Image (cartoon, rainbow, N blue to C red; front, top):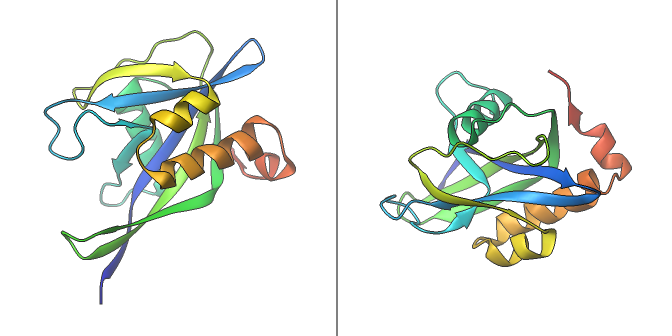
Length: 155
């Protein structure tokens, strides 16, 4: 029977350019051992003793330099299976809004970034779980459904 793990966080970062939402995607560096050169939302592992929220804030700071203006717990959990470790991973998803027209400070894990429209971001993402997470962020949080209001996290 596979193991079940919940030690990964994913964060969809967005900003508004006028009234249009733009989503930040990061390209993994070519020398990264896992999925080099792929486009993704901010992704990282929780450290011992961290909550998912603490891990998400740390990962965003480490990978982009941002301190978000607003945070949401996305009503979606990404799930994927790793055959190498025989583990089903449940990934907690967050959304974070940052100021418009700012550039991230990339860590060594990433070689490029792009601020994308919703449609372009969906096409660039490799994994269906991240595409679905982006769709939920766009529909519930960015477009202002009641579920987005209810899921805002206050520090």
